[in-house]
Length: 213
Image 1 (cartoon, rainbow, N blue to C red):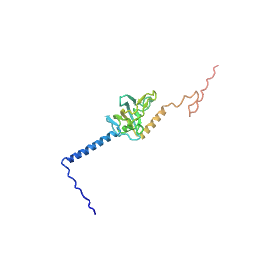
Image 2 (cartoon, helix red, strand yellow):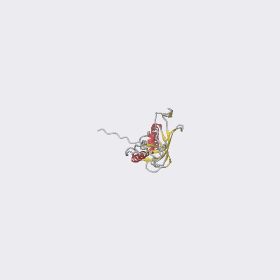
Image 3 (cartoon, rainbow, N blue to C red):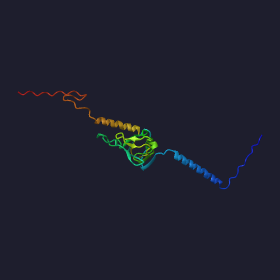
Image 4 (tube, rainbow, N blue to C red):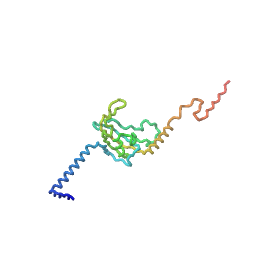
């Protein structure tokens, strides 16, 4: 049987071990830097004012006041609409929150990601890279045809969260609003003389006055 010749390990010279670890560390840092630069940029959220309560989850309805701008030049391309404008009087205050409603899971990826990290009453700035916004797609104004968001644009949103509603609470409020709106609407056109509103008996004609002689 052939005996395997064992080669003794050579001793490491003084200072070589530290150089070895320095080389390993440098390689690790280089690899980490390479991985960092090859990853797509992520969404950045800056908290201007802290909110309170739970953060939204899938299906929740988040009401926000916001202004959307292009990161490249600060040009505004969109802002929230107040759903309270144009509603008839009679809607109880607070039933419909201020701002525009957004459902979690129904927006562009970056905006959706940011919405899941906010709290009611908080104010934030969202920095959304193009890869998580509209990418290479450009967005035009439907009325004018003007390009409002050029292709590959990073976006900035200044956001204030006014309310967060669960699907159950949103449905409940929707039913309340529908009931109130139904009560505020007129029942129908006025009935002609002598005719009764639907569901009521017709009125008897008034007796004629006796002819004077």
